[in-house]
Length: 162
Image (cartoon, rainbow, N blue to C red; front, side):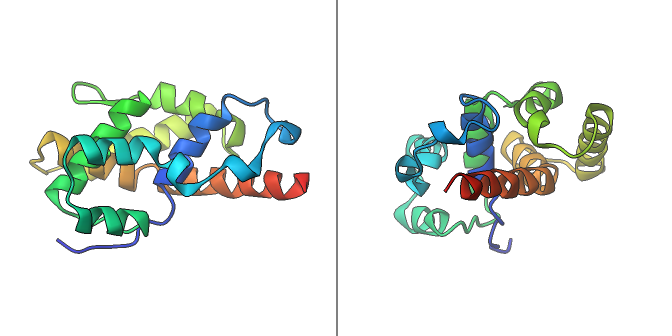
């Protein structure tokens, strides 16, 4: 399996979750001095710690490089479960994920959910995967664009507050 740079997908997942604590457009409540990479990745690195990920992988994760290996797949699974958007029985909770990102989408609810469900179906079609691999593929391949767009919008809003 090949290592790749994961284009800011995990960070936005965490930021989207945190943004639900603030009113939309409430930039005066955002203290950007307290927004750190390590703070945003608290859940991810908690999973890495609990799964006893070796230091060489942690150093890659800190650089947003996530190798396509079994341990990293299990970190993604743990991450999705701790965010409450993924479980082994039902997979990605599309409804819950929609609620997390809906204020930042440029498409309607039906289109978003249909797109995610189609992506999941296509990603899993014809594959025999364990629970970790399944979570990794779903979170990696079916949420990337939505989350990246949401992050870009959040960053724009933060820059508008300055």
